[in-house]
Amino acid sequence: MRDTGIGIREEDMSKLFDSFQRLDEQKNRNIEGTGLGIPITHNLLLMMGSRLDVKSVYGEGSTFSFIYI
Image 1 (spheres, rainbow, N blue to C red):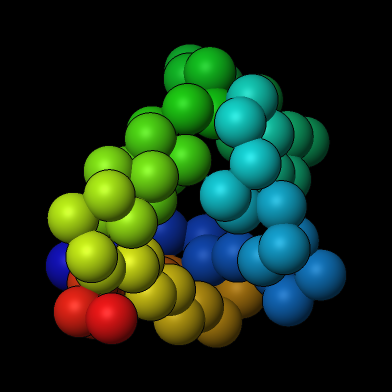
Image 2: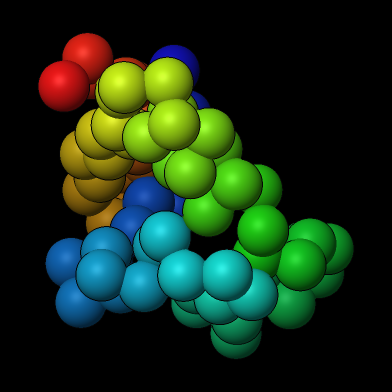
């Protein structure tokens, strides 16, 4: 899946799979969420023998896919 949102900064990529992490809160202050969607998805994929792959360019958007491991 590809989105055209704000993207994810390189330094924030390591926090992406941590529960309750909200990235770039200053820009996302009007967006609701708990920071659980990606960690839950990541863990479910791991249990099914896959992993979530994320490629992102800050300011342009992100691409999310899963890879069989």
